[in-house]
Image 1 (spheres, rainbow, N blue to C red):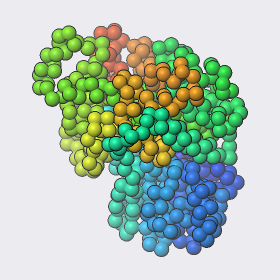
Image 2 (cartoon, helix red, strand yellow; image 1 turned 60 degrees about the horizontal axis):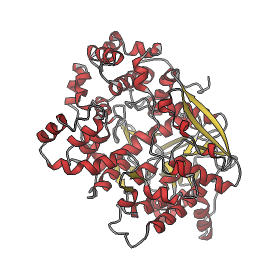
Image 3 (cartoon, rainbow, N blue to C red; image 1 turned 180 degrees about the vertical axis):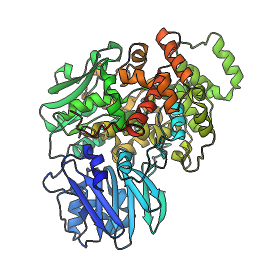
Length: 614
């Protein structure tokens, strides 16, 4: 347990706690945010039979605590997560429904000899596990399981195939064989060697009515709930900052924080050396003078790739766009002065803010036409050579739901992914047993019927936790920074689900109802600005010289030695990309990510456990 805790020391540099008892061992590293001097874990119940460790924050803990004390409960610590123990004593497994927060928790019921693992609704905090002959082991990161010697680090062939299909690995699969991720809104019960997983929360379905309310009424209700969510998310005993870009989402959060604090606000923002990726160049809330913001800037330049090995050691899960690097740089800069930051992630998922929502809306009727006819359409006046994502949407099937989502959102060259693989990997992928690990398993249940709702359902179930939040958590916690997401507060998510889809995507304007709600809060120049997402200039980076580690990992000899990829194909793609005759940025990013992950966590003795600043 001490080795496991040491492996994730970066997640909790402020202390360590260990509990050993019959049938159970719990270890925790603490990042002291609430009650720094009185919130140590593990926490034991009044009777001493129930023990809890929890990563995250329970934002409505003060309200829950007052109610519990009124019913006779006595608290032993100042920790916000202690309320979970007392709620469990009253409600058992149903206690999770009362929690407003982000969490991954483990609760040992000594009387029942039963372990409960649970993850928050949206999957803001990670939890991985493995079932071994000697029992169940779990952690926030796989490296803790490796440190215990319970699992041999080996990259999962099915995970590699998912990477090049989706652009990331889809839960419950992780990047490593023998290790699974607990899905968001799910719990795991383990008792007497028996394991049971169940869903305790489901993505709410959009209301089929709601036209009786005016847009202004919907907008006011939304802003009321956002204000309350921000107020709860600001609960901290250490200073709080925000992440600010030139976009609507982070501007709304920052403006609400400033309104609540009634004073200057520290904000951290990224600026890119490449102006095509510099979202702040078009102006942020800070450029308008009100509210008063103290701006801390972090720079992304061509040297950013040098951080990639360390970023992958922390992320543990590859993607096909090197998006780990901007997050790494922003988190590192934030960690120098702040431990808590509020951010705007989650907004696009609950309001349909991505461009593929509109693409899906306008191209779905074409899915009824024969695919051959749609292909012929693309050869004529509707040629989209410069907009391959539009062509992909036109060719996308109506069903299965996940296939359509991938066609609209996945890597451009996903169909040719098998040609990248070595003969051994192709054979392994063909023989993968998908039971319990197929991407479709994350979508268990009946999907909604409406076009907008179906896209949002996959977004919340798959892309948000596995692509957005996993990177956000792992790369911020690498620097001891806790990122809080008010848009994913349960009350905000529930209310947003009731707003008619036509008020979220109105014509070609995404997040229309939020823009209406933000009137008077943020300047119109930001309020009506088109979305421009955070991205790394990875295509340009692969077109030039790469850091020595990347050149080495993409060399034919190292590709052949690691054995995942067809070295001739990869080298040829890199040459074509550098010559400008084809865009292989996504596939090259994926290859480099897998090669790097293998190097830092599987086949190398190189250690990245030192503090990030060293």
